[in-house]
Amino acid sequence: MKFALISGSHRPTGNSGRIAQHIAGLLEGQGHSTSVLDLATTELPFWDEGLWGAEGLKDKWQTQWEPVKSELASADAYIIVAPEYHGMAPSKLTNLFLLLGNGDVVAHKPVLIVTVSAGPVNGAYPVAELRSFSTKNNRMVYIPEHLIVRNAGDMFLPETKPEHEASNAYLTERLHWLLAMLTDYAEAFLTLRAKGHTQVPSPKFANGM
Ligand SMILES: Cc1cc2nc3c(=O)[nH]c(=O)nc-3n(C[C@H](O)[C@H](O)[C@H](O)COP(=O)(O)O)c2cc1C
Image (cartoon, rainbow, N blue to C red; front, top):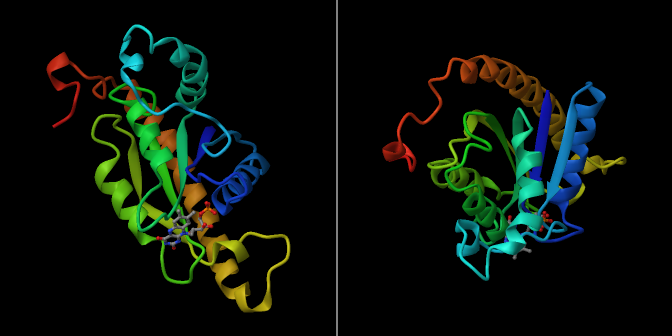
């Protein structure tokens, strides 16, 4: 299977990018192929009408968005690693959803949500936001389980402080379970998409409901 990981952090040295790389390493170790789209270091323009062909605005999209879009389209499943920023998913991630629009890049493919908080209690808001407000037109499918990484600066490191060992072990065990589950979803959804009913049958249904 091919997994595309998307880190929504705006910080090149953020925990989300590091955790996305960690998860990619686990999947590679299981024989899967991966790509990591780190939105902190991959400069994607904010959406404008050039994406819809407006003269004077359209040229950048061919060079800056099309390669990213192709890479994402080649994946069987996705892992969105979203930091919590002021109780929200970050705007670079929202921008990515605007770019995905109502195309079929991620449509009817399974997605695992991983949220990241530096604090000991937060991280739930981006789960709620993503589940509610990010799939109507791009039609990606969140699996029912998710992972919230709290105290993120102390998790998934080569050395774990004694006070974080129990949390780290819990998250590690849960992550392995969720990756196995996501792999099963990815395999099953290949069969699902091949049936053909996931294709939008008419332009009148292009934008969901
Ligand atoms: C602009 C901004 C707002 C943040 N707001 C929150 C927040 O509301 N809740 C929270 O738990 N952490 C918040 N944090 C801290 C992040 O949880 C922390 O940086 C974490 O490591 C995930 O972000 P990162 O991947 O950019 O490192 C915020 C960080 C930034 C940069």
